[in-house]
Amino acid sequence: MPKQYRKNNPLIECEYSYQTKLASLSDGKAKAVLKEASITGREGFFCLMSNKDLTLQEALATYHQKDSIEKIINPLKNEIEIKHIKCRSEHSVYGAIMVGFIAHLFMALICFEHQVLKRISTKFIKISLMNLTVTVEYKKSTGKRHIFSNFNPVSPVILTQNQAIADE
Image (cartoon, rainbow, N blue to C red; front, side):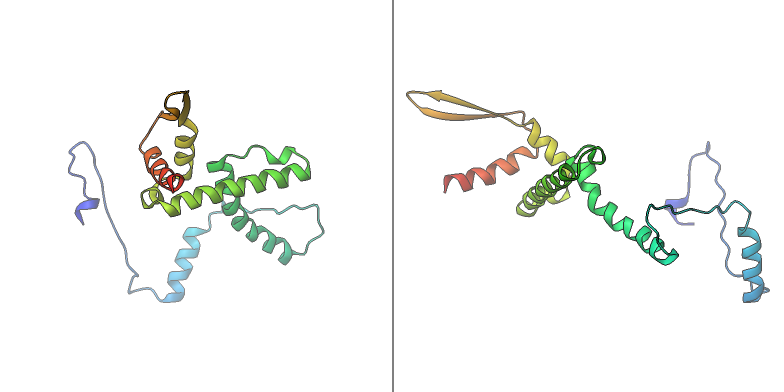
């Protein structure tokens, strides 16, 4: 066995086995053995319910489309953290989703501009920016001064680029 599958710890007992197609079985017999071993009566079922009158094919197509919709909404719920849109009016749902998409777009643009941030989760970038504090100090002699605090490794990457743009 490859080293990655071996355990060299005397306290752990592991047994490995593998099996290939038996030469004594034909394809039909092998399928019958597999069918007999896999059908246990606990396979289960699922029921699709809808308030619309759909055919079986339409219901299954709608069910399969839900996965792509969930992948689109997932960053909004888990990274941008829009809250409880199901309990709002139709206009507030559209507004919350629109603001969430715009926020996600800005996060994607930040990651696009900075190579270092491409491997960091949107959620961590958001938390970093939320914790960043800017204090503006006004003095008659020196004018306005910005004091940044609550840094973490993500903050300087974003601030350095944005400061260069502001200076231009």
